[in-house]
Image (cartoon, rainbow, N blue to C red):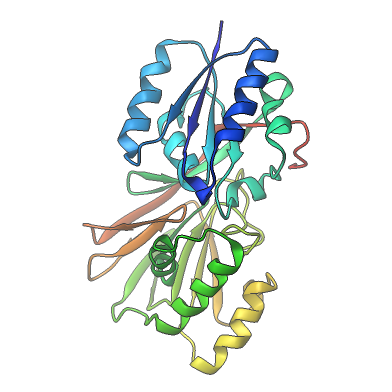
Length: 300
């Protein structure tokens, strides 16, 4: 009998996962699905190694129960395989789930294990790290690090953290070189995002036309601005129209390189990192991940 592996982040979104686990067990029991449940430990290597050890079994699917960071953790182990990923969004922003129109009940999502459809999903890379949603530098990374220290994982605290970070952040005094298909662009960005999906989470976007199956990344470059531009930029950001701003440039590419003069803070799918590198090779692998969608998902 094939096995479904559930990888659960018990603290994603700061919500107790007892009810979700109960639904999973009930659904699998009712439908004679053989399953195992693994709880993340905070060490990504543990999840990776556990999933890899299950490869000698007939894995029907791996289900990530958590937010975008948890989904990334799970996908790292099954990228470039035929094992499909199913997500049960239980994080805060849930950017990937919103893009795939999967803000559904747990019961409706679990139905995908019976009659779901598989789609091909592009996978982005920053050096050897994958990202499914976004990777970012500058203010993007600063906000991810700032928000990671907040205990409340809700929309309003996210906006409040963003406004406070916006006021305190100063663009780094170095030059980044973005090499896009043999063309070099030199700039000092306020924000630099490599987007695979059309939002950050919570439905907030600066790149509404990004797609997960076109073999391209949307490179969003937000130029520095004056303090009196902040209300207008925040307004456009909340109205999902920042891509119309004169301060924002979007370049679509399948690969590029990024160089900095100093070691950089950056984020991968909302998780902050401090790099030991000054050169970043960024690319996308078209259709490198199989995603399982439930029947009630309206994603086309």
